[in-house]
Amino acid sequence: MKHIITYILTLVVTTVTSVAIKPGTTDGPLAHTKNGTYKGIVSQPYDQDFFLGVPFAKPPVGNLRFRNPQSTTGKWSGTRSAQEYAPECVAYVSNRPYNISEDCLYLNVVRPSNIDYGNTTLPVAVWIHGGGFYMGGSSGDQRFNLSFIVQHSVEIGLPIIAVSVNYRLGGLGFLSSREVSESGSSNMGLRDQRLGLQWIQENIAGFGGDPSKVTIWGESAGAASVGLHLTAYNGRDDGLFRGAIMESGNPIFYGKQNRSKVFQNSYDALSAITKCNTTADSLECLRSLPLGELNNALNTSAMATAWYPQIDGDIIHRHSSEQIADGAFVHVPIILGANSDEGTAFAIKGINTTQDFLDVLTKGPKGPTGMPEAFAEKVLSSYPVNSSQNVLAFLGPDFVAPPYPFGKEWRRAATYWGDQVFIANRRLCCETWAKAGVDAYCYRFNAVSALTDALNGVTHFTEVAFMMLDLGGYGYPPIQPSPFQGLGDEYKDLARLMNGDWISFVATQNPNTWHAQRSSAAQTLGMAVPEWPRYQVGRGKSDQMTVIPEIFVYNANYSSAAENDTFRQEGINLINSGNLKIYDR
Image 1 (tube, rainbow, N blue to C red):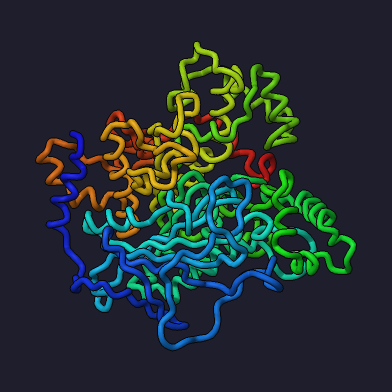
Image 2 (image 1 turned 180 degrees about the vertical axis):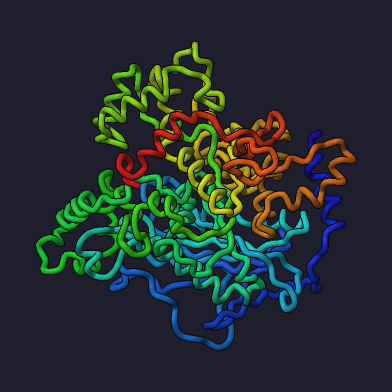
């Protein structure tokens, strides 16, 4: 059955309704925005048009540093070049050698060439990168190349346009203190994204996109960002998107959301390091510092990862778990999921005994610190020692002790941390969408790539190369191996399946649409078409039996299919019960 998906796709392209085609040209494509016209570049190998480095905000430099983003102003005649990537935003704790700058609020548009955009508009996918809100980017990082998903969309007869957006990171994007708040700014990096989405609504039609068919899409901090846009301004629907895709992140934020005292202490420390605390206005002093001097202070172990989105009573109105509980979110269809072994990226290593685990939960060294002991005891009871049923992917047999530095209770710790950070709230949000009568397609990714080993399993970020259809592993070597190195063709087929589902959702709000288009060809080849069920809760009407919710599992070594979303019920329910009071989210 190798390459069956590829063969089916070839058949499908000839059967679906096509968009209008125009003759090819080697001239740079033009896009007309409200401010003026941009000239892009044609990529002959991919038969695509690129519009790169398009500004959507004024450069956040000088007096605009640490301020909410401001829209671009002014119009021009003639054309401006959009043929080179702009720098990525200044990042921290990153070993990837990309061009970075404080002047970084630009976006990129990738669209199919040879389409008559005068008579055709396409659905739009807007990619928001992850990186913990302190690293990552959408310009130089080839791992987030949008050409493959656009190319695949044409192949399966559901062409889309893809957009990627930069946003400020670390302290430059999320500096938080009394001083910042009093200046009228907060969560600047999140507002960068929001302004980018507003720019897309106003201008994407000039690139051939349909502003009424925008899907926002992200992974990790990018997925958390998507979740924050779903709950922004207490769930106000500004008409910026009609759907959302979240990978390893969801509308209930994974971090503590109300840490004003901690952030104030960090701000005070930054002011002291830079000696801005000796001036009449420390924030204005920080704005006036040369970037190199400021960045040296921010790029310390204490400062680099200290900043991320916080409740401000405005764009982040209140705790996200409260908003989800009372329906204060934008009611649009979603794809939402996580990887089987998310926790191996976040679990504390070196836990050898139950007492070690208890100490970590109640005393540190890493969140959630300060957990009441009574709740921590319930965690230990809900996540028993070496229970293989608690681990969905293969992290090594229970009878083999993990080597140093993992700790004897590595599997136990990894299972809990994966649930606590992502998986528990993934389930809660899927349930909430279903109860609200809004379509939710939820998943578990379960294929180990060449990036990890058995002890880390299907860890955080594993799905990205599959979802991006990066079969050549662009952007990984020499820092990491290619994700598909040494793997069989079934892994590439899985990538095509997952990528096609994402495209189908962007185009039609249903990941199964392209399955239906290829069903007759698939049946001819003897291949079952995997159906991705909508998430359902409650009681069935016909037989009064309890409805068991299902998620879709992406597997490489055996068939991808739906499974009951009932695993680790006790532990997941416990975590969700503590969202507000224990986890501050």
